[in-house]
Amino acid sequence: MAYALFLIAAMSVAGLLHSAWLRSPLSRPLAIPIDGGRTWRGRRIFGDNKTIRGFVAIVPGAALSFAALSSVFTPAQWQLTLIEYAMLGAVAGLGFMLGELPNSFVKRQLGIVPGETPRSSAALVITSIADRIDSILGMLIAVSLTVPTPWATWGWMLLLGPAIHLSFSVLLFKLGVKRRAA
Image (tube, rainbow, N blue to C red; front, side, top):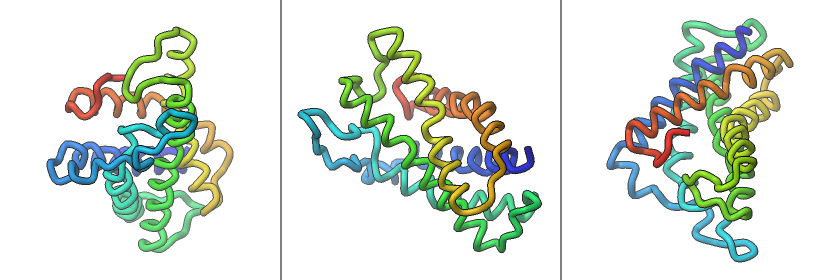
């Protein structure tokens, strides 16, 4: 549980930094789609919502939050230096962002417009679940490839993470960053 609490706290701080960055006018010039507008089979690869500005915020934000949190609380097995915690945070942030891409790709190929609610109720349920766990899985894979991560951490993250992720989606909606709350 200690590992999950560390990851939740650190990624929550990174998420707050990310939200502030997305609201900043300084981030707008970096709202460049990472797919460059390219298509596959006549449909966008990721869409306009997956931009460089997200990576520019979450990767260093996670590095800073992991380093800062490590000075207060660290899981027992992760005996890392401050710099190693920052690097782990950067890896976690990168994994978090990369984890969203397969889901975005599939939704674009199914004709689901970025930021819009799917028309069918089955697609809505599936995409809602995928939207809450894709980035968590990406982050967990990245962290697990870097440091020993107990399976229980995966369980706690997949149990608690989606509710926290949904909370951030609602926050981004209320801040005007996203067009819908979920």
